[in-house]
Image (cartoon, rainbow, N blue to C red; front, side, top):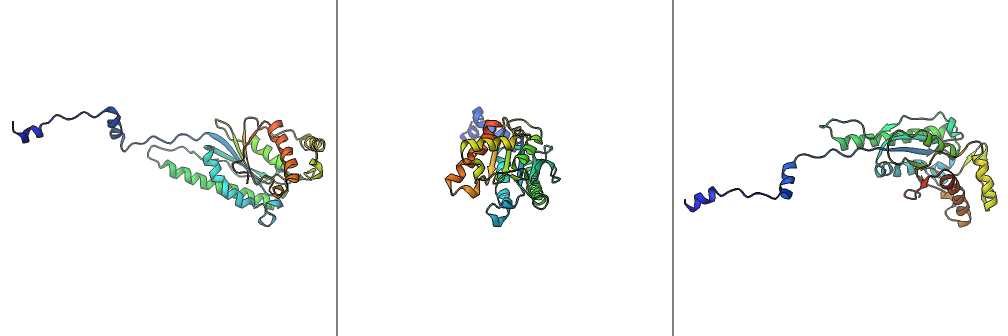
Length: 247
C-alpha cells in the first residue's frame, strides 16, 4: 500500500467522552430553570413619595423592581398599595406571571423579558392609583395586604416594599416623640399593632426601598425609627429584612 493510500485509510481516532459530549449537544440547549418564588411589590402612594418631598416613589420603583424580580427568581408577582387605609384601598392590579407556559420552540428569555415589562407597568399603574386615591401612609396595612395576597409558589416568599416607612394613617402617626425611648417605643408598637395584628411574614424576605430616608442624616432620629420597625418586622412578624435595595 502506498503512503498516500495508507493516509487515506488511516483508522479513525476515538475522541475521549469528555470531548465528544459537547459535539453531540451542539445546537441543543437545556430549557431555563423554572421560576418559582412567590413575590409581591408594595408601592407607597403617600405625599412623602412625591419627587419634591425627597422620596421619589416612582424613581425608586423603576430603579429596583426588575433587579428584585430577577434576583429572587420570582415566578409570579402580586402588588399592594400603601394608602390612607391600605387594606381597604380600591387600588389593585392583576398578578403577573413571570414564567408563563411555553413550548419547546419558544424564545423563553424574550417571553420572560416581556413579562417583566408587564410587571413594571403594573407597578406604575398601582402607584398612580394610590397617589390619587386616598393618599396616605398606612405602611403596616400595605405590607399585610401584600403578605396575605402572595401568589402560589415554592421557596421563601419575597416582598419589595417601596416606601420610606413613615406610618401616618387616621389612627396612628409615627412621630419622633412617640418612639424617643424604649418605653415609649414599646407603647407605640402595641398601639400600632393593637387590633390590626402583625403581618403574616414568617419565613418571608423583605426588601425595603427608601426606608427612613428623611432620618438618615441624624442618628438620633434614625435609630429609634429603625428599632421600631425592627421590632415589628423581625421580632414580631419573624421576617428576614435585607438591605440590598434599602437606599
